Length: 132
Image (tube, rainbow, N blue to C red; front, side, top):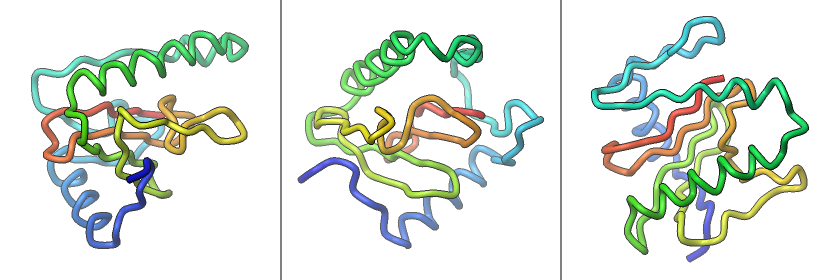
């Protein structure tokens, strides 16, 4: 089975219903954070990366670290949710190839560039929630 498998309509509805309910998700570019997550959690400020967009090594480094973390906390055949708010949503396996597009980005990028990007374990036990 390949990577970046599209959600069904039912999965889409169930997932976003749960995100809005459980995380009290209220999309906003002025309110931070626009979701609430249970403790414990860690917040990282990556806004510095946007001040120097020429530093693509830092971007690649963050992708590598995130992918290593995903591999560390998933099983070989486990797929996680990869969500691009108001766009496509996918199941993705961190141990398979994370193909990149013509802009050298994952299908659902890691850096939130004006959109919410979430990578969440299927039972919502952990996740990477990117705020624009």
